[in-house]
Image 1 (cartoon, helix red, strand yellow):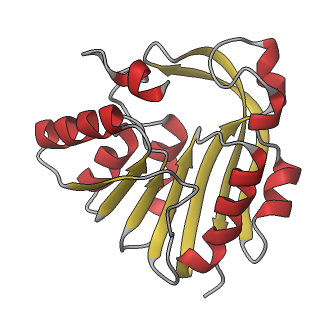
Image 2 (cartoon, rainbow, N blue to C red):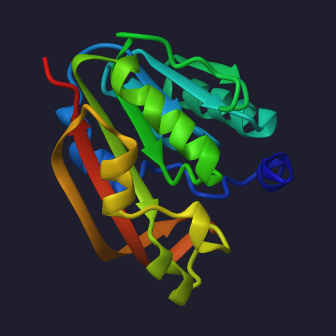
Length: 196
């Protein structure tokens, strides 16, 4: 499905970074950053432009091809890894930042990935996440078609033990990101740090 979505010449979610990421990227300390389910690379390329060494992981090879193309166009390097998050080892004490922007996964896989994040971050490292909440189903402006793939502040608190939330909010905001996300969106945003 994702390879099909990304196969066209245009960027389905645009080439500009997610607004929340662009506003909050400075909260990530210097060091390597991992972008989960990165798609076509807009967030990874933005972070690389800020000077972070960035690794983008995605299961869609077409998305990673576009990530590489976008990185070349912006004169930055992004390491692309073609992998299913079910099989991808986030490592331990490895990342200054982990970025999850609209990375909607089936609940068992989401719990597995989220459960690995606290140990994968370096002490002082930051998770920056934005996802749709179930209220998004009323808007129809993007995101998964079913509530179980979405997230809430409560679910994130449960699934990310050991992180300290510096920001955790559910809100509605205008999201204009290519053809994929256009209009009012119901989201949860999180900035969570591994204690130093």
